[in-house]
Structures are given as structure tokens and as C-alpha cells.
Length: 509
Image 1: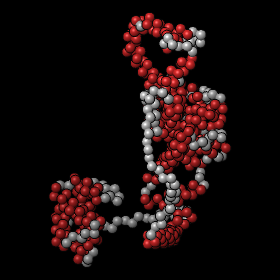
Image 2: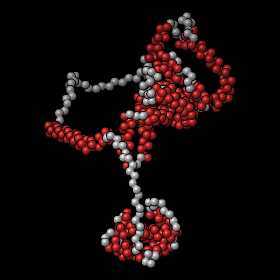
Image 3: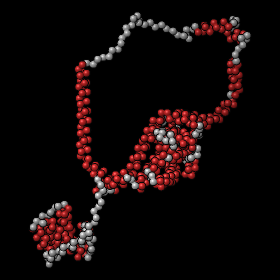
Image 4: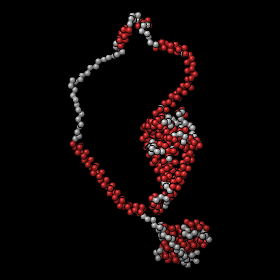
């Protein structure tokens, strides 16, 4: 492994920092990861669903795609293992090289190790390193170490995110259901979940595949980041890189000077080496001339050497000593630590607080039980109607002849005032509005669609002159206030609008 070519900063990290490193690598090389992922998993999804559909069990396809995750995980793992050394493979190279080697290890990951909570952390050991099975098992145990718990928690987090993403995709459809049809939609959904048709199962499989395609490369990246971090901690990659950089810096900066120094000091170094070699040679026992020169002319035998050594060790400067005197009792008393008893009043207060807390907790528990019973009694009929209410077939359409509109009276002003005087203000304003619309259409030669709104009538009245247009707008506004806001005008306001409309539309004549 060429650790000099690593494109990431190697340093001891915590497990969560290593996970963040792996996800950052996935984000950096997203295109190189998701292109081969889609090219492999999408045809596999189609083939698996088609086979299960033909066998009459489309729901099994979701389980098969989930079980094949370790095979698909080799794609992002291959890209990350090369990209971390600065060699980002293209789509064709990834599809060709991702499944070379590691076939025996995949048997384990598709059988007894499929449910391993640290799959993303241990998969690089078998796929990238290889080696004998016994050695790989020892490597897995050593590599997992303290990171096993974090890797298991990471799997749980990604599983929850995947489930949330699936339910989020499914919940998007509920946003487009009108409020009045929500209850019926949930009833239909409950019935379809109990007896799901094949097309609905296919949609569910597609949602799960989409969520997996979004999150699974990030899960593999998190395991790869932890793998790099554990190898850095175990093998000291950061220390090795630091020494290599130091060596390169010294060779680059001090290479010429070191060469000149070696040339100039070569004779002295050889002489020093000879002297050190002579000093390391053991002296023979019968060679007394050298010992006499070393210890003086009075050297006779080895006892003199021993005496000199003893005399050297007796030098007080080599063994400084001092006396310290202290007083100690002859019979020391053995004191046993006795637990201190709390005062009786403090114990009584503690028991009272404990009793009050116990009673309070039991009261809260009873209140919660009563609340649950009341909620069950309150909502049980609604739940029964949602779950067990049979589907009522829609009523057949009823054909009915449309009634012909009642013609306007000849004297519109008198008819409107008669209704107003009788206390039927809404009917009077409705008749006034209808007569104004008919007069406007007759003056402009416009045609309105059936059930036209007030806004459409106002837009059509733009073809009138200014005075009739203003009178028509006042009639429309008066009718809107009465019809929608239940605001009836005063008598004076009503008479003013009626007189103005009669004048503009020629009802007096």
C-alpha cells in the first residue's frame, strides 16, 4: 500500500470523525460512485422484480434486493479505495474491477455474516486485503476493536434514515389529496395494505430501492473511513508519513552539505573507528604492562583492581547519605472507621419525601391509565369506522331536467322595491344583480358561461362606458356584501344604487 500517495490527512481521529471523513469522500466522488451503482442495481432491480412477479410473489423482490446489498457495496468501496490514493476510476473500470477477488469472502457476507452490525467496517478487510481465512479472521477481530460499537450504531442510524426516506417518498402522494377525501384515502390505503395488489407492491419495492440507492454509498463510505482510521491507529501510518517527510526534507536541504562533510571527515572517522575497535577488544590476563600503565607502577595482580573499585564506591560523593529521626508510638492504636448515623429527624424527613414521591407517582400512573381509557372510549367508534367500515358503492347518477330561468319582470324597479319593502332584502338584491347582468350583456353583446362568477361579470363590463360601468360595479359589490358577508345595505344606500342603475340601464322608461 502506497501511503505516500494518500490524498487525505492521516491522523488519529475519533470514530465519528472517521465516519464524517468517509461520507466526505463519497460526496467528493459522487459521480464516480453513483454512475456504476445505477448501471448495476437498476437492471438487477428490474430482473429480480420481473422474476418474482412471474413466480407470483412480488414482495420477495424487496427481500432479495436487501440481501444482495454486500454485493452492491463493492462498487462504492472499489471507487473509494482507489480515489483515496488519487486514482479515481471511471465507470467501466469500476464495473470491471469491483468484483475481482474476494469471492470466498462474499459467501460469508451473504450467509452467516450478512446480519453483522459492523459489515461496512469489516468488508474492506476481506475485499481489499484478502489473505487466508484464519488471518482474515484475526485481522477482523483486531481491526474492529473499540470501533465495533460505533459501527453498529452507525448501521442503526442509517437504517432509520432509510426507513424515514421510504415513508417520506410515500407521504408525498398524501400531500395532493384534498382534505375532504383524506379519510376515504386512508380507508382505501388500509384495505390495500391488507390485500396489496401487485402494482402497489412494485411501487413499494421501487421506493425502497430509491432510498437504498441514496443512502447505501454513504454507509459504505462511513465504514471505509473507520477502516482507514483503525489502520492508522494500529500501524502508525501518520508517524511513518511524518518520518518519510522528515527524511525527504533532510535529503533535499542537507544533501550536498552532508556529502562534503562525509568526504572531509572520512580519515578522522576511520581513525576513531580503529580506536573504538581497539577499546572494545578484551584484554588478556597475562598482559600486565597495559594494566600497569593504567593503574600505576605498583600493580601486581587483580586484587589491586578490586581494591581500587571498592575505594571508588566508598567515596561519599557517590553515595550521599543523611539520617532522619522521627517519633513513632510503640503501640499504635488501630482505629476502625465507623459509619456515621444520620440524625433521626433527617431520616424521618427522607422517609416522608419518599412516601410523598411514591404516592405522586402512583397518582400519575393512575391518571395516565384513566386518560388512556377515556381516549379509547372517545376515539374507538372513529377507529372502528376507519378500519371496519365497509366500502359503500357510490350512488348512481340521477338525471334531472334543468329548470328554465325565470324571466325578468317588466317593471324591474317596482319589483325590486316591493321585495325590499316586504323584508326580502337578499331576494331584492339578487333580482337587481340579475337585471344588471342582463342589461350589461345586452349592451356589450357579450356571452357569459353558465355559473359565471362576479369577477367574470366585472371583466365583461369593461366594454361599457364609464357611467354604466360604475353603476354596474356598485350593484355587483352590493350583491357580494349581501351574499357572502351577509351585510345588507341601508335604505338610503339601496335607493341610491337602485336609482343610479335604473338611470344608466333605462329601466325607468
